[in-house]
Length: 127
Image 1 (cartoon, rainbow, N blue to C red):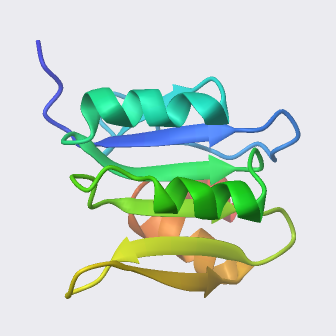
Image 2: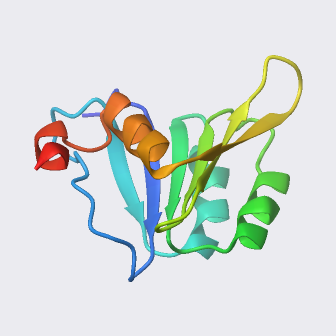
C-alpha cells in the first residue's frame, strides 16, 4: 500500500543532537532518514515529486549546503533546511517568482518550524 503522505528527507550527522522525530505511522509527514549527505542528490533524482522538504542536521558545511541549493533539480519545490547546532540555521524556500529565498533561523525559529510542521513530537519537545 502506498503511503499518501509527503516525504521529509532527514540527513543527520553522528554528532547531531537527538530530536524527537515523529516518524510514527500516524504522523503528518513521512520521515525518511538518509544515510549520508552525498546520497541526497541520488534520492532527489528518483523521488523529487514526493519530497516536500530536506532537513540537513549537522552533516553539511554551509558551502556544501549552497552547492546543494545550486544543483537542486528544477522540479524540486520543497524547503531545504540546514540545521546548525547552537548557531543560526538556514532555510531555503521557493519564492513567488522564479528562484529560491534564503532565511536565517534562530534556535527558537527552528523549534517553531519543526513543531508547526509536525516533524517532532510536541510532548517530547516540551519536556
